[in-house]
Image 1 (cartoon, rainbow, N blue to C red):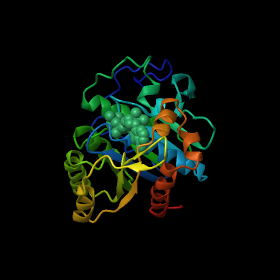
Image 2 (cartoon, rainbow, N blue to C red):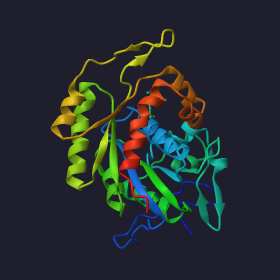
Image 3 (spheres, rainbow, N blue to C red):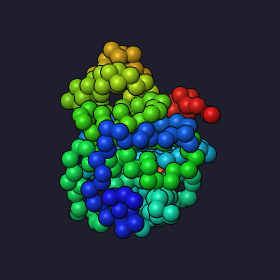
Length: 283
Ligand SMILES: Nc1ncnc2c1ncn2[C@@H]1O[C@H](COP(=O)(O)OP(=O)(O)OP(=O)(O)O)[C@@H](O)[C@H]1O
């Protein structure tokens, strides 16, 4: 089948999608949400993983597609490796993080022989790989497919958005610092141009929880995020604190366990989960 060669799990260059590439079949996927950010390193993958785990904890069947080809951090956040990826009847079965829920994960990181191997493909080849994440993966029946987009508003996120026959909405992740907010405004315009509904903005690393006294320390003094949200009629779904314990949990691949625990972070995240569920179809 596929030049992605999932049987050997070797990331050979995939087919480039031809203009006549078949439309992606999403008939068994009820809802699709994309998670994006204007720039890298602000917590986009963190939020995508927390969203997928949180929805699965709430009893949903969830798939998470990590489309970040150059910095696929999703496998590490969930503590999964290429050994967790099965191939049955020439289809990849998404890896299941522990503790076991109805949650399956696909990432280019699960197809690379080791963490030091970069993906050196041009845009069309990357788009071909993403297409294969739909055609060559057995997702099963999903309540939610969460897509972790590459950062920015360039060719890669654009190409992926244009592949999707269904998109309930986008969540934009940022840090509340003026330097990051310029790119948030670009992301908001990008969504308007593509006619993709905005679910809301998540302000991450919004203050630091002191590990000694549990007090919140403000890190950035910008009010720019509120202004950007007001200008675009967007709502801020959550202001998530920076939490060293959370960072540790991610380094140890314990995202699901973290989401099961009560904390200021998980409490702030509840509104993201509730808003996504409100913007969803049950059919
Ligand atoms: N609220 C938080 N508290 C503590 N650590 C955090 C928090 N959010 C993110 N991090 C840490 O910050 C780092 C960057 O996060 P993440 O990988 O999610 O960013 P990203 O926007 O997806 O980056 P990229 O687009 O470059 O892949 C990670 O090491 C993650 O563990």
